[in-house]
Amino acid sequence: MFWLVILLFLLPVIASDNSNDFIRKLCKNVDDSKYCYTLYSPYANFIRKHTAKFVEIGVSVTLTEAQDTLTHMKNMSLQMKNSRQADPKIDHRITHAFKACVRKFDDVLDNLKSSDKIMDNLGRGKTLKSQLPDVHVHMRAALKSEEDCLDEFKQVKDTLPTKLDMSSRILEVQNFTKYALAFVDNYKKTLK
Image (tube, rainbow, N blue to C red; front, side, top):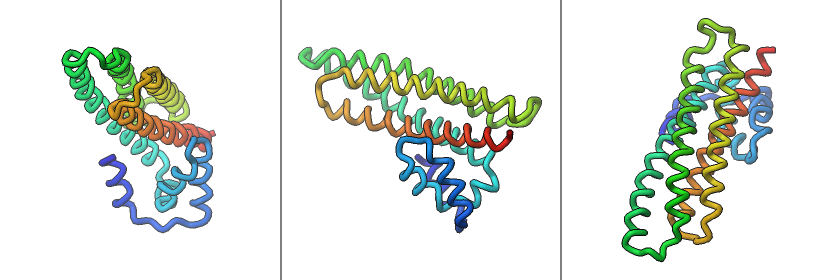
């Protein structure tokens, strides 16, 4: 979230109608397109003029959010393990969900790091057109791992605050991943 806040405050740009249409197109393929549009429309002129840089920032923001979520998940996993040892009545599926999600979020981070590295080197050595599909593949794989992790928590019947907290954090990372993926895909279309 830190990088998003920096992005939002360091880009004091007044958006034109044309640029707002551009943002509308970027956000149309995500689940919460209204939120995406509201979030990014004030910076439409910058985004339109510096799309590659914006896509790179989107991937970096997603990576930072995923790293923060994994750190929180590992801390909560340890707490749940200790709580379960103290109280065996706690549903074993919650500790299983944490273990599985830590592994899945390791995969998320690997894929986001690969995407971030490609974006950092965009246009160096290979053509942009040949690099963006690789970013797409890694972002899709990250999204799949996030979905799998969320499914692990859905299997836990309890409505523990821990489950709800982790589910909302995973959904937030998933939204950032979807936004970044939509931006990558739309940027790829502009290169055709």
